[in-house]
Length: 595
Image (cartoon, rainbow, N blue to C red; front, side, top):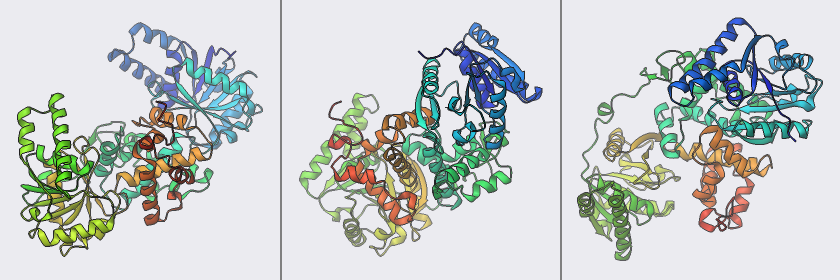
């Protein structure tokens, strides 16, 4: 029988602490909210009343319920006010010595049976617990911000935490309407261990001038469906907080270089550029604490100026007969371009035609396309089985198999057939664009246009420049993306470009976490969906993408960057060898034949 927590203490009333107070008070639990001074106490009270008033204004909380909620909270200065509570949750800044001092004092003040919990997101719960005489009653209860909204709670047990304490806290989480995942005491736990490696990598990409802050953020939002881009998220978290978490994870987590804070982070913290809370971080905000981004010296110039020098494109050739080629043909035809589709024979052309027509018909049925527009789009497509019909096009988009030798041979042929000045684009997602470009005598005209699948639906295109690509070619590619209604993000010719370079190491880290038996696939997926707002958990996504595809991309990243942390997880390699490739084979990290 789980114990009944009738009163709870919360130490520290910043955004997180005040949010935790609200969670408990909303669920009928009396709360003693403690701060170090009267001024800090009033700031915490203001955060709580502001949050509940906003909930009332949005119709999510009745006025009577708000008043009842606030009546359950008693504010006090000093830890002595916690002498009678059943549970204390500490939510002070992430400094080990501070937390240890607080826990030593709580050990003295609180009744012997009280559970002492820390909301730390990165520090060792074990090191905090040994500051008390009751380490078996110390546990981590890691809420996510904003605590009243986010469903996930990481319950962190140490090697000496009592099983009864763990069970009592798990039952409490359910009472609060939270989803708990119980894990052992390891740097970063689940969510931060996976999230901050990705965030750090994104900062490194920006520091190296690989892509602009806007393009990095747009790529991850539009390419992966994430609620925020990594640099905007860093600003929300606070760069000082992010630095402390990364530094702690690096020191506690085996000194993985992926968690060593990128130097730019420390420089920005030293300069006071902490993100939203200071009014400036990677972006500039209307005022400190505001979420409203305002233009600054790094804001991109107006689109018209940026696209200066773009060539006029009227006729487009698309080479290939797979899913990607079919989608790209549809995208260009719907946007008003005349399209020449080139496949390896009449039979394949017929299949592509049928696939395009079927997709357009679905658009009509769903009310997204009129019959007249469907017919007009189909009327703009010319079907061919020979590359010679590309002699008069203005742009060629190649979407053939991901084999470098095949692409190089194709581009060598296009070089001979196409008129001067034609933009030659490859949709490769993993191969070096420069290798394809150098198969021609016109590398300045070659660029990568990496569409995402399904091309008619996905709004992102990665525009990949090589060191030989001309500014006019890039401008033309960006103008075409805009005409298609897509967001084009510009980056250099490096393995994985933006999206895959940031996404797949994160997925690989999740596999390593599972392989180490730290947590289950279900709990890891829950943590990233509920704790970080991701549309899919890493194992769900891996099974959809295909484990063989994921392994191939991860190998390419490792071969190019030679970063030990990028080495493919052995478990991923073993599953692929065993034929467990994900949904397409019926089994990957989960068995899909039983669903």
